[in-house]
Image (tube, rainbow over all chains, first blue to last red; front, side, top):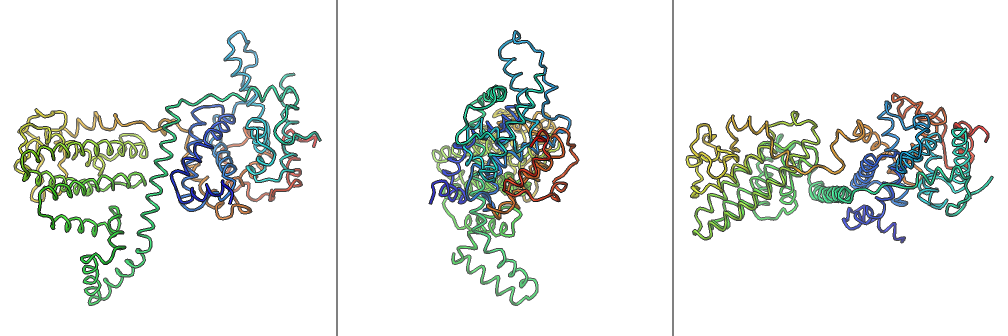
Length: 179
Length: 399
């Protein structure tokens, strides 16, 4: 039996050691993922906590993942992010237009860095949710195609195609914005 | 098609690479906040594990008890027989499962009155004052744990729990009076320490209740948690009173109502101090006077001092997340039955894709619900489906 499956079996029995191991292994990655989608530390912390709360609830019902735990966690986190934005229609994700491109670097490197990140996030938001996930998981979380496929419940071929379209779209959006 | 296989390569268009580099840094979480989040997760895990254990103990018995109740109501001779059999079983300790179920029951459960009766029976069998004190304290602790468990499940704590708690505490104090002086002092130090820990627990529970119920004004001032806190504070005050010489009958409790604020030197005979509760005083929590209630309501030192939940107050969390989380739960619930092919938490990704195919996300309005998306085509895990779907994705028209 694979080690991951054994860990999940113990988690289904609500063994504290297993649940601790899961948290220590995946919480930071989920936090990074949510932060990169939302750009907000507090939101990222909240949604990370909620993701693991969902895991516990599912395990308590003897439901939840039987394999590919990380994929399950990323999917729940993603759904929570979607819910988060849906619950705040008055405060949509930043658009490219909402980011001030005229802020000169002279105002400080930190501000410039934040500005670049916000612009990049706004460009990313122009992609489909699935493309966004592929970009984040593949290029920021540095997962392999197979890992991304597991997380997104897709085939490797499907991920390749998605990745290609995502990169093309992102390039176009960024170039259009630069013009 | 240019492929980016294996681990991500650097073979990305420069403009994309630059954007990704900008997204790469993620601020570290404050280690204290991180630790608090981890601890909250683990304590919830422990609570759920305990809850499952309780369910395991009581689950099998519920249908039987339900069946018994039916018979008891309908057939009187049988009722007598069943009741007798049950009593004999309990007395002989033969029905370990029943006793176990009763012992782990919570207020509101059909087993709870049995649990209390069992406790009383156990108490009555004891002769030695030190044993009585120990047992009564242990049973008072049970009440605290019950309140904690109820609150953690989002259920109200009945005020009866506080009454039972107070009764057990009184029993412990009364029994301790019969001890030799050194023993009595030692025991009362022990009781005082126990009270301090219990008070900490209940203040934390009150915080949970307050978080759950929202604004402070919405918290029921007369709920069991607050009554428990009051009972603890008042008993602490009694124990701190240097004039306290172990008099625990109702007539000798003038200091109870003096409240915590008065401290050990509180006016024991102050008007309005003691709140007497008539003949069954031992079974009612002694609340503060009206003045104290007013003061307590205003200051709420117990609630203000509680440790804050990790991640800030609910008000600061994403708006109405509980509602959305509930919807997410439903998704997850339906997913969990079939991890491989059935719907799963990720299925909504497909829905999102559908959604997104109609326009950019910031163009959606909040009135959309999931049902809007379920009628669409089934986005299965094949490339063709992705390609078809992508035709409608913004920015993918060249595909």
